Image (cartoon, rainbow, N blue to C red; front, side, top):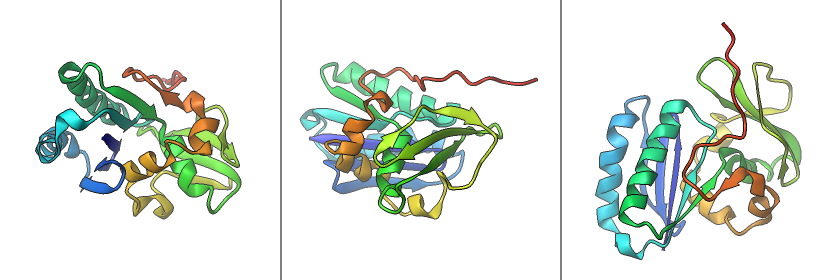
Length: 188
């Protein structure tokens, strides 16, 4: 069985085998307090020992969001050390949705500091990520309506064996460390 978790600043999605939505929370910053308890409740609904793989959103996201996800996953790893963990960048998940409507463009994810994680794409291929305040034309911001009504955990599962996944292996991780491949620069 595969468990898929997707978390971003105002949403938490949890699905099993990519089909059954176990949980979805659409709240603001208070989500940090509620996610662990809701996660425990839904884990009780499925046989935890049947889970072989956990797909999770590896960011980029705000620091708090990334730490919530990472803490939950490390807790699971303690209980099930042989379980496989596959981190899928938000960019890969968003690209799989957006490329149905556009063949090229830019995806922007707010850093929550006034700038954005930016990644351009052409077809099913992402380019290197960078941080910028400049949102040029042809930009899809992660809170765009195209992305809001989709179970993003289910989407992660659906793309795990597709070309979008295979073409963007640099945006996939098999460990539980948060590594965006970029170090934000802070100006004073």
